[in-house]
Image (tube, rainbow, N blue to C red):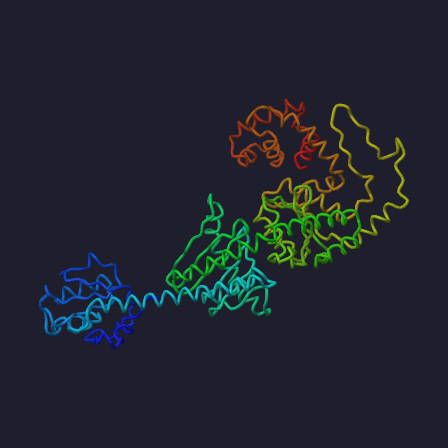
Length: 553
């Protein structure tokens, strides 16, 4: 920070005397400019202490000369006496006082260069102090990064260093952690009392939502970049953390170059902390995937013991299952568990279980918080949601009990299905009575995902009672076979989506065409082509039902 004019006038060896503008002595002096021009302002930037002997100035020039300096934003005027003028003309003192511009008398024995050197030394001293403060702040941030909390500790420390607030955001812009030291921004979200969580949490989430447009701009940028925002009351900086998330800092004061240095140091530490745990997170994801396989096999006790080794536990029952199609499963996992990854790559959240599964991210969420988690997951991609009320703990006993005494159906027994050579066969899976709740719920979520845009719930799908009886593999084969002629058709038109819209609109041409964004005559042509390719009458209710099941799978 530049030294104040008051500090310069107080340097005894310079023998400077303030004649006017005492109220402006706290202005910072950014440099010293010596000029004997009648109008030096074209060569000034503002913030200078202008020195002159007034060799071209007379009393009549006082008011316009002072006015030009004030308009340019100079810090003050030093008038040298003993050469052109024996004393400062009273007109200059009067004009300076009226304009509020500090006017300093420079005696004959004080060379202008001495004032310039004094200001230069003060500036260098200020810069050294700022750099020292920045190094000290970087040291404190580094020590914070080495703590167990890692990124959370860095954010807390950064908020204190800048005297403002800081937010840690996931790749979608959702809030991970918040900290602040200014008035209404009083606490971190992950370490505090319930009152703090309420006050700070409401503000932090509101601030995170207000930054969503800026986060979207940064996320869509071809290369990593940061941005700065300013209002009369607040100054904000937003930076990406690689591709792992973002952080934002705010202060009631403009950020100085040293403050930017501190913010950039925090950004580097946060990026490093988030990237270092990638391998550990990948290993933890593989373990959770194995745990999900155990759960689906009914080995609940073994799954719980495996989770305990990671410092986690199964969510409280009953649960809802989510099948999530997302380009960044790690980011979604971190967002859903509500915690930043720790040094071991494990997650602190215990209310939700996530695991990679056949190209998707499967989530077991307690019913009480399922709606909120579905909304959060939808920010990261498409989500299929099972029916609620899934019991995990009883699955082990149910599988064992249903397998005992199970006999294969006799050939030709009642309930067997006669297969037709002319149509793909659909196995209803009625003989799969040993399938337990969790396995069925995962199937429901995956089926709902097919129609998700971005969210679909199994309980809202038409025909769910029949679909819940279908064997997933057989049903997928059935759908692939019956729709194959449409997928193999060479036209650019998506006949499957057109068929889906037509059936969903119950055969109403205008409604279906509007849903597709095409003319109804175009849709009529497509449906005629569908009927020809499939060899089916689309006006037949049985055909419609069969095709609707196929497009829903």
